[in-house]
Length: 294
Image (cartoon, rainbow, N blue to C red; front, side, top):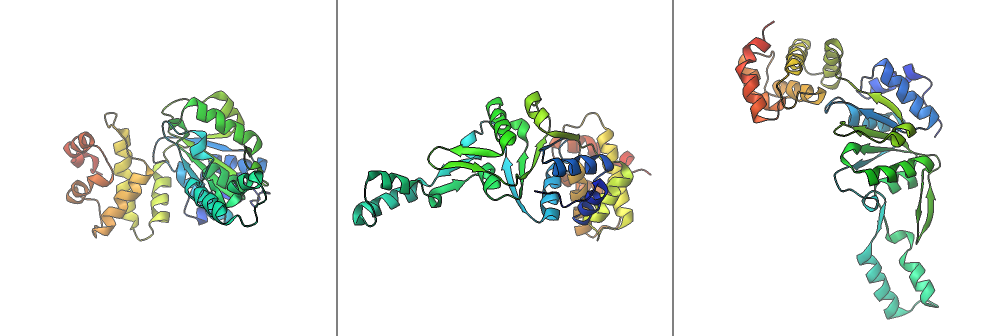
């Protein structure tokens, strides 16, 4: 698609309107991905807003978001297409019973692979219904063979279905791949993509994110929660340091309980919103009073 966004600054403003605050670097690489029609690979710690970026792009472009969640063992068929086997069997039985409009076996076979029996999986759906945003989430969870498949699709934005023909996306979808860097991706896939590392935001920016996404939360509570989360991230013994998603969850939980400030009692009661391992909760609870100190 021709980019409807005039510049990186324009993209930043439009993302901001969706509630997603992008820094200059992310706005620039995002605009280049739209303009150059290149996939965008974003890496970073969990909870830094990688998935939310794809959601925001789909919203500002007013197109469908198609999400492919990667996992260990995923293969091309699970990402691409399948045939509706039960409906094909019913169709075949109907044809055998009626023989209406059927001249020979070849015609029966062709009718079994009609478009109505084709089940779109995420990649094929994005190609067939473009313009769209295709989110390939946590691609680092997949294996080498699946990476090779993705590279082939992203090189041509087309796939061949033996019984159906070649499907080509025109225009190509906007593609966002995310990775938590549990393993290194191959250079070939990286070369195909534009790349950006999304880091945890600074204190002031994270307060702004909380205020944008949760306008009902007071500035005081947003600042206290964000400051406490930053102190948690500075701890080197947590199994999972909290991301921006946990900051938002903690602020939302405190606000739902009617808390106007983050005091010791409120923090202890809501720790499950910000730390998600029993060992982490015990460590944080033992030093909670120091973390909340001004």
